[in-house]
Length: 430
Image 1 (spheres, rainbow, N blue to C red):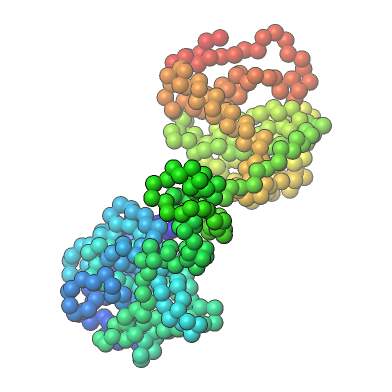
Image 2 (cartoon, rainbow, N blue to C red):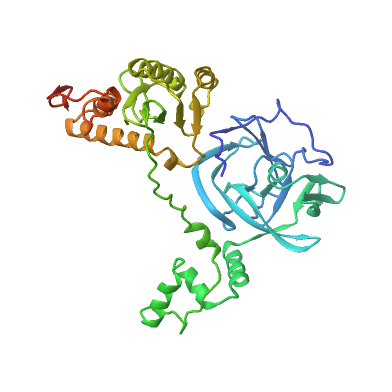
């Protein structure tokens, strides 16, 4: 659902758009209000009849409106309220949009009565008439044409009349809004044969067949007027609302046998609070063989390319090996021209995980989670503010790890006890 503009301002005379073809006298004195979206420059025209009487059942077609608008939410579904948006009218009056939702409309087409949905309809309680936006319909469904007797919509090769001329350049919408309960009842009876079992499935919050059967057989439900539960067909609401993503199989992939053969990377942030040096992100580079991790704090994601160049130079100099693969997600910071050019020049191949599959970048994702959680624990224990998160992440990475991957990376055996520093206030103690 599109976000509503932060403010709508009046602009009636200086930026008047061109008249829509065949719209006649619609720009006469009967025009009710004119507004402009501050962020896009689009215009919103609300046209009304000569009478000031309010009717939630009348819909007018408006070729200048940027959104569908209604004065009543009784026909709305998926309603979502938002902070009131002022709409300045041509007569210096002000009305407010307070929410948006979808409205199911019934219409007559060459194939008979059909139903369609107007999406993202604005709710403006003090609007005198409901408003059908030609621009929004054209964007979401198809083109609209105006003739002497009315206006016509078109979609998928089918053309039908959506509005009749009412005189004075106004067109009255020939669609009927369907109340949510009517739409649901029709959907239930049509999909499930109107069985009482399915009706109680809906009434009890989409309870499962076994759960409903248990209530009926044990007679523990009050007012449930069915003696046995019949199996219903697939419930569309359950199919959409209860579906879960298929779990990734736990495949233990063997680590590479050489240092720097594969480098895993991921960016974490933005953090709610910047560090004292203005950092809001951190990026990790993890060697697949040794799991040795290097962390860099960042002010912005655009620094990732420069930090990888710095990391590659440092790692290759210290190990005498060359980086072969850089594995990351599909973030734009890893697809920058600067990073792509560097990798191409050095013969480094980039491997990207598919979109919305962080599981496939598990090494870096898990490392970032470990760093964040342990850093948070250290700050809570030491009573430090959130601005210390950067220092805590660095401390966690360099000192508080439970194993020593540096040994694997440098082929040097550890001597003595590793140094673990515990933050206390603004200091540290061993």
